[in-house]
Image 1 (cartoon, helix red, strand yellow):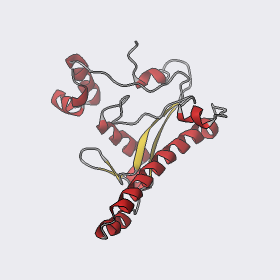
Image 2 (cartoon, rainbow, N blue to C red):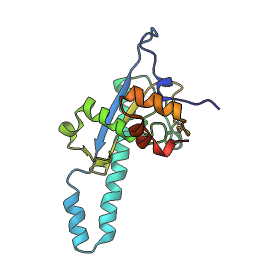
Image 3 (cartoon, rainbow, N blue to C red):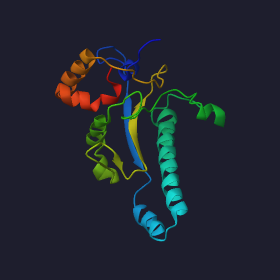
Length: 185
């Protein structure tokens, strides 16, 4: 089984092929906290949980809708006519991996998204010191259009890979080890 890297799905700068990748940050959680707090003050756990759950689902749907618009309209590389099972099975071309998930497990990469998209100014979303997104009903990540792109998980990494990552990221090895701790061999 090959070991994939997200950079496998973008053309090299000097490869003679014009290629693109995208970035996104969406939320559906703006201003739900007062509503959640009101339900919690009334000891209405059901509605409090439902508001948060529905907001989370809407955020995922928003991210998926934006990915669809990129594939079919903005970049226009995909002429899709999928049934629901094919859509849910991600039979479409392209992926939208996110920092903190298996293909990109290092959460601090969200800082690049925040800087690139000026997320806080444009959406009101913020990052905590541990890189959690606020509001919690938020999704951010990258768009890849490569026809062979697919989701994968980064396996365990060795010390040489940690040192290489630290050098490329411009952080100390100990910081890289902290950021990559779930993936250390």
